[in-house]
Length: 172
Image 1 (cartoon, one colour):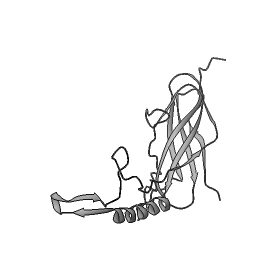
Image 2 (image 1 turned 135 degrees about the vertical axis):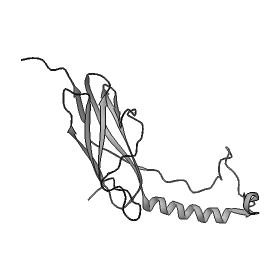
Image 3 (image 1 turned 90 degrees about the horizontal axis):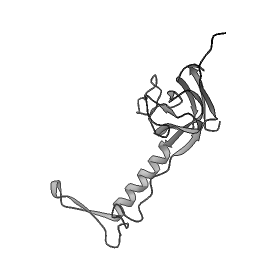
Image 4 (image 1 turned 120 degrees about the vertical axis):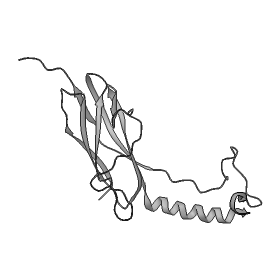
């Protein structure tokens, strides 16, 4: 099965500002980390997680299956509380950015090998310094070495469009 993210409203309705959305995330392998946020397509502004702006990334996880014995967190079923800022209609998508554990572990191995081959530790304790080997250059900003293995990018998944409504009801 291909990895995918789906969502549906499980609480709330047309006459309330707040809704609960259940996210079903099918992914292959184990997740190193996963962050969720909202992509605002149109309409009234929407917050999530108790007031975070739509684009703010939060760590939603399945409370019943927080982590297994290895510390791997389950992101397969999560719940997101969303709230419209004012009455009207909003169209949103739920977004999940996942980094798979296998990708992170491969980077960590590659990075450790690169570090060992390109630096030397001098001294010990409080006087310990790690210096670049001869011929290894710092990048222009001085924050790292120019040829360090880059940290892997997260994979992004999005749901289909979700329409939220907050309207007034009238007496019939």
